[in-house]
Image 1 (cartoon, helix red, strand yellow):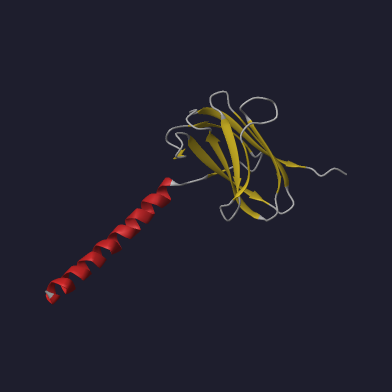
Image 2: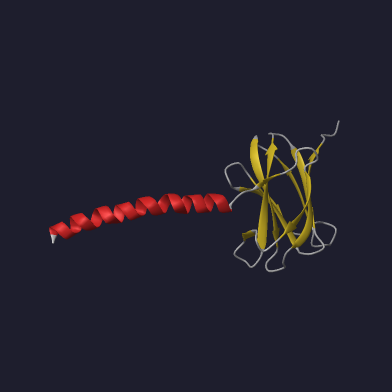
Length: 147
């Protein structure tokens, strides 16, 4: 019986050694946030069912943007195809700010926030619930301080 345990354990470890790198490669390949164009920090894009599933029936798409401590931002997300939600995730992955519906009475999103830490942030575009997919426009504006 002892011989079977010795034979079984190396086989189990061998299988785990092969399976872990393959799984990590697959996960790493699936998540690939897009850089937000640095020239105008604006993008016209399309949210599809090939994007990140939210677990609530909708989908999300992530954009990377480098921000500096003290930046004041307005993040505007609009779509005629779906009910938008905008989320700003900090360099450590925590939610910095989020907005569902903007002040104009539509289902578009408008978010104002001040950055407290320099780093690379994720701007997440997503649809509310199962409201769908479609074209959207995202704009990140650095606001100038009032003098």
